[in-house]
Amino acid sequence: AQSVTQPDIHITVSEGASLELRCNYSYGATPYLFWYVQSPGQGLQLLLKYFSGDTLVQGIKGFEAEFKRSQSSFNLRKPSVHWSDAAEYFCAVGALGAAGNKLTFGGGTRVLVKP
Amino acid sequence: NAGVMQNPRHLVRRRGQEARLRCSPMKGHSHVYWYRQLPEEGLKFMVYLQKENIIDESGMPKERFSAEFPKEGPSILRIQQVVRGDSAAYFCASSQTELNTGELFFGEGSRLTVL
Image (cartoon, each protein chain N blue to C red):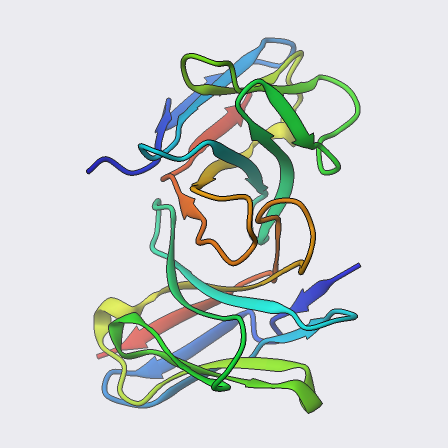
């Protein structure tokens, strides 16, 4: 069974500083990987996804993520955070060949942005 | 272009009562997923439905929980005889295709509080 670990529960970063959120997955085959963002009281919005091809994936809002098979990681980065990036971020893995789009989510990383 | 619509957004029930949560998928989407988010945790898959069919209910508790997606109308997640541990945010997602390369679109969630 697949699993996703986000080691950092909380991260505090200053506005304008860079941000990196860690994600490690466990899956027996090629995973489909996703990053979602959840603002307080809201649903989840897809930031980016990786299926195949270029291992550096560009997403919305200036985010990017890099798939590293050797490290089973899919870390999310942003060069310069804005106060509006304060939210909770979830990494998720999809099961290749399974019926439907069932995703396994990590526990999330809550990002606080200091002025 | 309406997204995934969930209602009610907030629901308060006393122990032993029933909770019904509704989800209307995006227009043109015939695949619906329910996820549960317990406080301070990530989302956990509950059930995957297509019109009139339950495809995967491997994440549903064995008792008191049921889901349906009728030919007409929204998908319903029903929780009978609620207990305090059912307090959570319940998210519905929809997709256009069963392929797991398709994007999941999430609603804003229904937050259930059991007193």
